[in-house]
Image 1: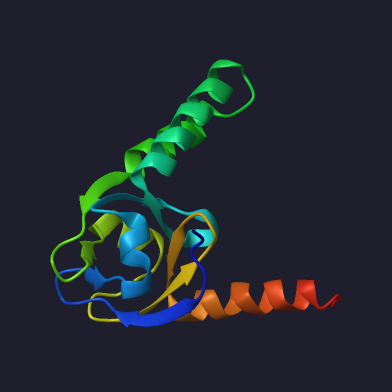
Image 2 (image 1 turned 45 degrees about the vertical axis):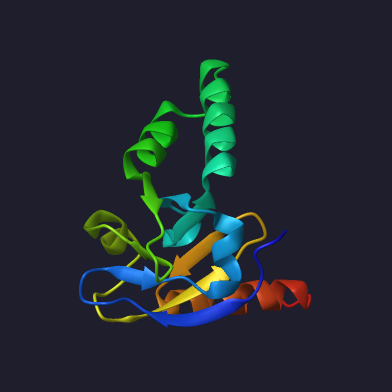
Length: 138
């Protein structure tokens, strides 16, 4: 199953985010949070993240990827458990990386094999750029 759609949500004052109900079953009880592309926070099903970690490790050993990228990803990642309300806690470092404010609005967007959590203004910029590119704009 794919993660698709975009939803506006609110972080609470403890840095917790209630993930959209449509995504919770696909994530399972545990998932990984990590630095994502373009200053987003990636929410990745545990099995997918572990497979990607193994592939990245192999690429680093083969000299095809940077050890620094591996280190940055590994250091930013945390295995989290969804609570009974479907919430995950986004730690301070990830919130800072993605410019997410406590008690502030966020966008939770599907990216096929994962979710991405965005500051609304940044999401609008990347969404506009992607839409323009799809439309053949210059």
